[in-house]
Length: 167
Image (cartoon, rainbow, N blue to C red; front, side):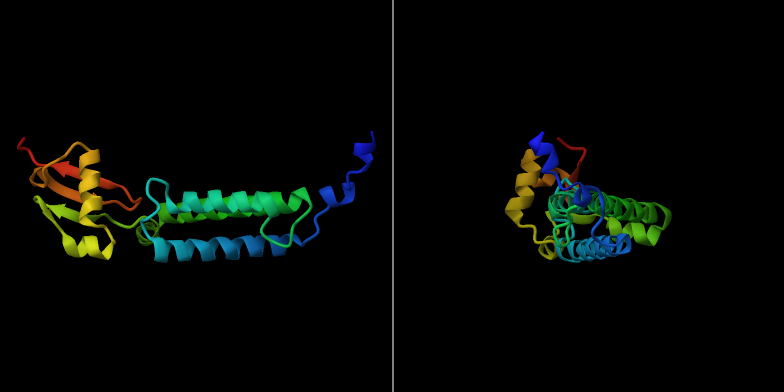
């Protein structure tokens, strides 16, 4: 039972930071990172949505050290994780309720191919090379660009393809 008495029970269950400070820190970090990822990375997260990736990374960090000054109590870390999940849900809810906010969270598709022709200006803007695009077409079983009626870069980073009727 020596190991039982070695536990610092007062630091395990008693928060060492004010709850409001934890909520503010979690909110500022989440919203700052969300904004930076949205503006800088835009669609480059691939199949995982930006907010999903952000929540996963922040929760992992919060679980490790609760993002601030090595929290030692469980309530501090739990409150921070809850704050992060709240902001993720709140932003998704706002996107569902407000069309303008939805366009910010999930931008509209960008045309990469139109009637068998690459839209190089859009590709350049999104930093997609011809090789990247051709690779995506091959992954979807399309070898001939002329068979592509439209190809779009979707808001989640995936490329969707609509083939022409001719085979």
